[in-house]
Length: 368
Image (cartoon, rainbow, N blue to C red; front, side):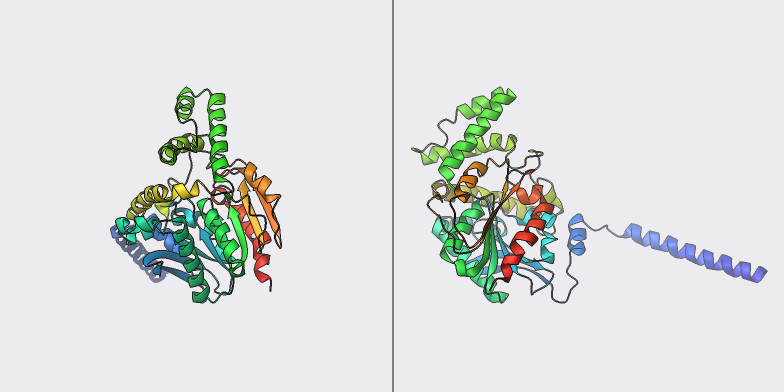
């Protein structure tokens, strides 16, 4: 009995020593960063999973492409980010994980944006940033993805500015795509800007916000059809109040992924510095062309089209999309309204976006 008790005591003492040693070792270790935790949590453990992030030669310069998915045989989806220059990678991990169960998802930091901005001398890239060059880059990216991953067709998703590229690609190369999905779809940019300005000014007046009213009234006429340079200078001033009055995010206009990127496994602090610089470059070089875009004459798509739109979106007018959609002909078309969203549908209602991708878009990838 005594022997057994002594043996038990020694055993427990040994366990205690091991525990103390383990705690001491743990105390000496540096805890992992949130980014490292997120990176490990989403690491693919399946033999046919894809995790690839690299610079690819596109349009004569190095451009950053990230591709992730759980199964190589899944349909390939390319997400064209907005802005211009507003790269999606910093917040993509927040909503995209479940997409990867059904799609292989590709993100591309466009010319002059994000990681691509950091890879190339801005002074050399600036003269090349035209609407035609951006569309040509997008074409090369799609061809690269189709060839690399052995896909005859892919799903094309465009958000905001990316929806301008998306429509142009879908019109030029319908045979490349299973479907086109427009999120926050741009339709008639000149009219869109006027409607956004009017709604923001009305909201500011209703709110009794004298400062906002004074600043917005000082911008009139907005947009200025006779002075493109003045329009570009005034755009950030108008956007400041437009975002305040429930445009980017309806439920809480103050939230726009401002903190989410800090935990991103895909970007670093220098990447975010490059993103901000790329935003400035992209707006200055591309806004003139963007401000003239009008898709109202487009009446037909030769491929299925689906639109996800926030009911409260002022950045890309829900009203304009509704009227344009009624005129469109396509092999199939669908407009899905997100009642609790404004411009950032995929961030505000990520669960509903996932469900709609699976219900409305995934079946289109099985067409012959």
